[in-house]
Image (spheres, one colour):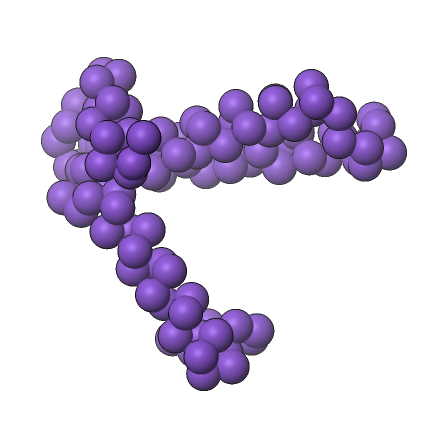
Length: 110
């Protein structure tokens, strides 16, 4: 499955209002919450299992990553940008930073 196909399928389960004023805050807050759940799974992996990644822990993290991806895909749609374009722009940005020796450091425009 490619990003375009995933985005289409994700939209089939978007039940909230598609009005920008409501959808963007809803999706950004959901994205933040799901990213937090990924972090929680990793935190508990270290707290409860000494950092040992079991198949069960891996699967739980992957499921939460899928929720993050869903929110990104739907947010991209509401912002009228294909998820594939988001991915391509990100890779281009990182490649440029690598080429310029600017992968490390801070700031959006390095």
